[in-house]
Length: 468
Image (cartoon, rainbow, N blue to C red; front, side, top):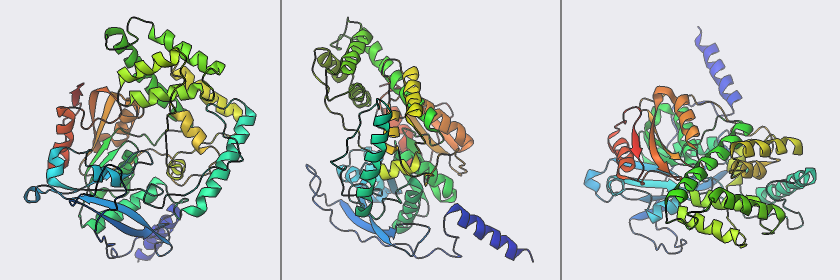
């Protein structure tokens, strides 16, 4: 006699959450028709072991019978079929990285994984071959620099961003549905289309957010999930900006220590922090115009991710001699990122407070990538489709987290905080080294991930891999 009210309550809760009510039985899985990949990747000719397909999916998962789009997918067949474990899905980072290109290059995986898994990935919504918007900013509008210099810049950036998004929106059917939660449902559809009972997944950088939220929504479908270079989606805008700046400062401190002890550094024997401060002062005076102090800092974001310490030292010496910094492009899939990371900054005064917060956390490098994120999304409609929240994951197999101690982009503090949120449903492995991306750094990091993915062997609590 209580079944009808209970069913009604479940339906109401599901509709409030914004997703369709569960059906009594899963619909037939979507189909993948594998064929040759287009010859569209310079320097990487088509490989007969790699096949490509397109998976037709709903634009809006709340309207499963509404408009559709095609998700670009690639698969590299296991090299040793008789030892094949199953299918491993790779979650690309960015957001904006192409998973199809990762599979076609085949350079992101160990020999063991290449031998024992069919390796599959995709271009997420609005990326590359998957409904990427074909648009450009309005050439009549000025794009203010980073950081913004005053209220006029703040207003100009709002106008610039909104005009750009208005030009992009008509060119991509998924522009307003590119959030990670929508991609979670894409991933589940891909799992079903691949015929895998449970998901084996390796997410890198921003792809770790996809792995976290998939495990949260489909815990019973998880076989093994690796999170490499961990994003923390629980942060508000202030701690997001502060922790990104702190991570870059930590990586810069490590670079300075290397310069002090290594003759390989072209700044060895000099006060590196003083040289760097002079470079920033030059940028503040306009010596590198139109490049700004943020463009100078962006050089560290690029080189410390390697880490490429010798190249960073050479770049600083060159800027100290008066050469402007190279332009560093830090592309991001705007429609995905801004739907996941709100930038509720109402005016220039609040923005200036964020700049001060970043500078306090990073006295040498000042900014970090957090301010770029804020300016990228300033003016995005609120509320966002996938707002930050504390993770609630309950999986049979703990998620494996792997992070460098000195990562300038996804700082170690993010990894430890996500591990805290996961509790016994997560296991953090620390690489005691540097850079962004750690899986193939050393024999230790590679072995930890491979044993987990192949055998579902969870490393012991507190496992650490020494720097290589």
